[in-house]
Length: 357
Image (tube, rainbow, N blue to C red; front, side):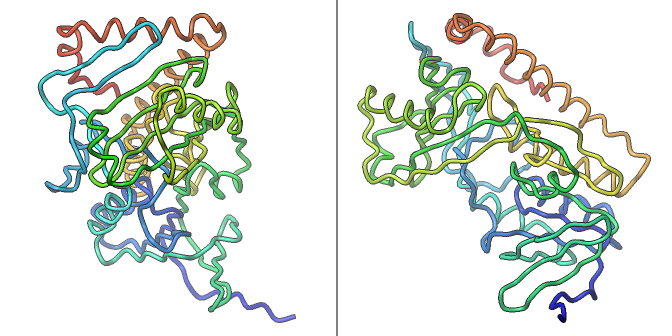
């Protein structure tokens, strides 16, 4: 039987996944070397959209330097709610921002020079140590060879599976996207800490320009996805938050880091498990890991010190999470102490500029 797989293409670097990690890796590779032949493969037909609350912190903006107007909204005030009370943190300058993930992805893709080829709507069906196989219903299969392969293909990474890496620690995130008419009702960034409903995770309200994200996240080894959905709906009912007609979305978030460099194959972002189990933050870690992988491909003698710091920070988050989560009574106590500490305005202002990554 004759194969419909063509084998006539080769790239220096193939990046699977056009999220922040993959796009940033391609951006820096194209700047570091004008001679590399680079291909990005994205399974979705449109770059950018992803299940995500769409929150960025100031270190994201300092790193990305996005154009004015790219953000949906910016907030100097954050509201935190526990069982015993609430706190408002207002340091007098914007500290958190919301953004549409499609718009972010499209802008990041636009920064990449024309020498980088981007294929969308293509599925990787096989990976070997020399090539990948792409399928297209209309064109059949294509065998594309590589010198370096970067798995930036999210928490369900096919590259990670090819490497034989297990994913035993992951979080579950879910949200309702309320339509534009709800924006006037929700004007503040809010976080809700209630261990009964969300374990060591939390719920949030993130107002955007044309929508509002209301959702929650938690590590799956504490609350499985089905139970978390039930808890979210029960919490929404208790808070009298109407999500009738809203769009529901859910995703998994891999925080099972087991390395990022495997010979000529690299992992970045969610595929590497570079998500904070405490905060759920993943965009900044994706940006840093994407750049670090690019620099390692460009220069084999490069010292990836930023990556070491990133991994060390996430390991500390994991250690704190495991310590606190072992005892149920500690979980809510941890949250209530944090909320009380956030009421100390001088303390918040003193440390609000620190980027621990």
